[in-house]
Image: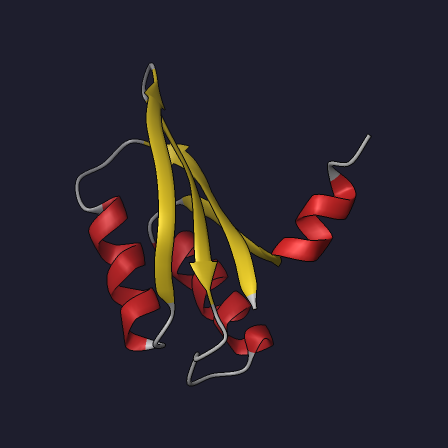
Length: 89
């Protein structure tokens, strides 16, 4: 199963490294990512494969939320099918 991870917040050193390290620890594969800076704000969207994750999706979601809070970032994950349904016209 694939999922979309979104990250928003003030730019700081190590955001991508920290999130990728957390995902790697959970055996989540990063398939694609796009990141940019909007003035002082960091934004990133990632497509990840969670089919081999070693934790349940709900736990992964919680750990990403907590990792974001620790860095003053908004990190969210949602299943790709839900993301697609929400953005379908």
